[in-house]
Every structure is written in structure tokens, then in C-alpha cells.
Image 1 (spheres, one colour):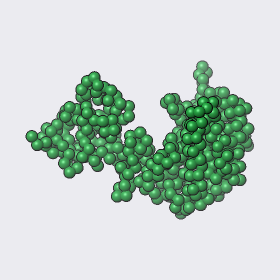
Image 2: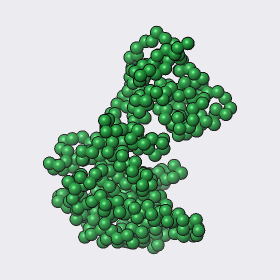
Image 3: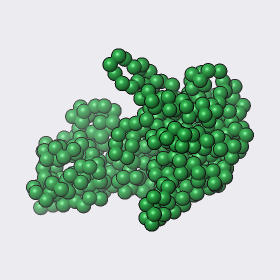
Image 4: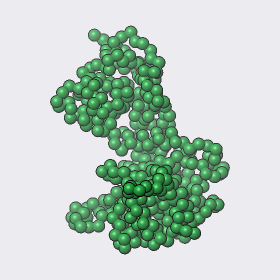
Length: 434
């Protein structure tokens, strides 16, 4: 089997890992240009300073001793199999890099023989790249649950980021769909990586020339839709992982039915892409906006709204907190307003030192007024001409999600000046008593 045939098989087998985004581009180099994109394995990720970098996303092998029912590479699945030798994959990575196809490597693997042997093979790839080829580019490597701690530690000293995939959100689902895996076996390397990163920070504080352990931190992935867990269960687990293991990122992958099994959704079922999108939006609120999982969902409402993004849905359910006066609100209050992000909230705080803000000023500061107008006042006034009720806000926000302009959504006219309204019982705006 040629190297190109192996690459085609193993890059395709790696596409279900959602820890970076596949470009799907097959653009060859043209005269006078530098660099090109290959559909087989090239994907995009983002560095800490915001640069978009291209990675070779590939498996060392798609042979696997496990028979996880949701996995396309499961042992019982009849599909083409291939494997790179460590030297072959290291040389391939360097050839791609020299041709300006990639800036880094995303390396995962099926489990061959046992976790220790698999980790040893992956570790050899990293060793060759870092020491023989002096490769200083980005490397993201998957740690194999069940491997010896010393192997994962050595891997962390060579890779920029490590990740351990949780795959399914509960022990019950793992037992049913991946009987060879257990929750404890998956969390053990996570704990090791967390401890090693913390210890390495202490070492670097004392000895600045100490080797750095996984400077990009660690991440994980959960499959959405293969098992019956609710959005609330998934977000609660996500919150716990951030709190306990200090993960950089939790990735969600909409389950793509690839084979028939009585325990899995039918192959005719479409991947739950909208649900995946809503979970990513909720995850963003957990990481950057100070929300907690229990604020967004609960046992009584365990599912994220398909019609509204989580921040808008939360705001509509808490009318007692709105409207927020933009000229006096705290940073945390501003972050809770739909249409205001981290950057625009900071801009508002800075601009307030020099002037009193109005709605035209907010637009210049990057606030998305199509959403924020329902939850903000400027000097005590709502957006001029806005006839507001809770139903109007719901219809306007829903229209935005469906691609309609707010003015195209039907509105109920009010008999009162909207600037003199307040929320009452979470149902509608009532006139302020004079």
C-alpha cells in the first residue's frame, strides 16, 4: 500500500474527531503562489494569538482492538485498514511542512495490541519530529486511556496539547456502547495531565529552563446523539470538567450514524447538528460569560431551545433582571445581556468614562442591537420607536435566528410609551407608576 493510499484511509478515519475543524478544501498550488490545501487530512485550528493554523489530522492506524458500537473504526466493522510506521508518519509530516501545506500535526490512533504499545508508537513519532527533525511546530496528541503514566508524561513533554476523549457522557452509556472503556479509566489520565501541568508551572516559576509540559493544556470530546443523555446532563458534566480538570476546551461531536445497531440511532437519522451548535453556544457562556450549567438548564427544562440561542433563552426566562441600564451596569451585568460580548462589554466600560452612551454609540462599540435592544436602556430610555412586550421580544429574537429581520416579525402595538415600561410577572411590560 502506498503512502498516499494510507493517508487517504487514515485521514478519513480521523475526520470524526471534533477537536479541530476540517477545511474540506482540495486546492493545488498554482504558479507564483506558495502553499496549497489538500482534502486528505488538512484541517484548521487557532493559536492563542488568534492565528489560523493548518494541521495534518491523521491516525497512526485505524486498526483497533476495541469494539465501541458508535465508532467507525470498531474491530468488527468491515472497512479498509492501514497503519503508518512512526518513521513514515514523521517523514510525511515534515514533507508536508516543507511544502507549506501544514503548520502542525494532530495525531490520534486506534488501539493496537494494548494502550501501552499504542502510546509507545505515538511517542516515537513525536520523538522523531522533535529531536531528529527539530520540528518546532504545533502538535496535538491524543493520550490513550489505560496507558502507563510515564508514557503519557513523556508525551506531554513533546506535544503542545494533550486530549483524552470522554466520548459518552455517562458510565451507563459507556457500559452499553463501549464495554471495554470505563469512566475511571478515562478520567485517570485527565487527572495525571492536570497534576503534571500544575506541577510544571511551579517548576517553571523556580527554574525557567525547565521543560514545558503540554503548554496548550488539555481538551476532550463528547459524542452527542448516540446515547440518551439530556443537554442538562452534558452541560453539567462539561461544567464539572472545567472546574475539576481545568480543561481548555470540551468539544461536542454530533453523532453520524455509519452502521446499523439496535442500540444506536438508525442510519437514516440525521446528525443532530443544531443540538451540537446549541451546546457549543452554551459552552461559550460557561467559559467566558460566567454562567453555570444549572443557570441555563435544570431537571425541569433539560433541553436547550432549538429556536433561540442559550443566552437569549436565559434572558427571556429572567425578566426580573432586565432592562439593564448601560451607563451604570457592572461588567458582569453587561455580559448577561444578549448581543453584548466580552469585547463590547469592555469597550462600554471604557467609553463610559468619557461620555454618556446612547444606542448609536453602542452600535459603534460592537453591540448587536438587534438582540440587545430588548434588554437595554440608555439613560432610562428604550430604543426609540420600539413597541415592546415579552411576546414581541420572543418573536423578534426567534425571527433573527430564522434569518428574518425583526421588523418582519409581527408585533402587537402598545398604547403606552415604551420608555415607561417595566417587566411584571415575567409576562409583559407594564407602565411605570408616576
